Length: 105
Image (cartoon, rainbow, N blue to C red; front, side, top):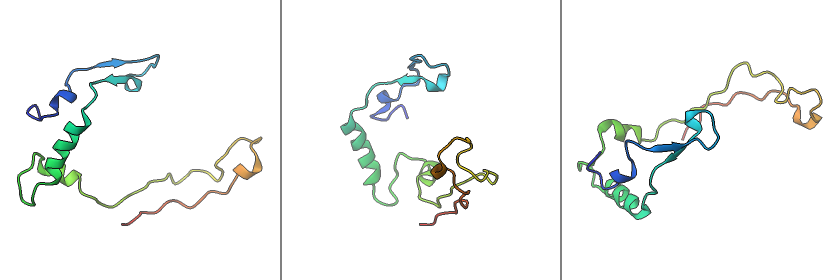
């Protein structure tokens, strides 16, 4: 939101520093450091808004921020050993472990 008091810290155009990396996503994004108090003030306004008060978040953003179920995924065919090198120490070679299950809160 361009009217946000912290909009200056999130520029639309910014430089990146590849710093020897080859892929664009590996680069360091050069944006200004945010004043921590400015960020805390804005977040505090949202967090302390009374129920039913119009806050600067869309319904989709509020829904996204709700806590939900935690899911973990693990491939079905991982193999039976965590280490596949024949010269690895025996203590590292273990039988496959059971897949993780959904965690409920």
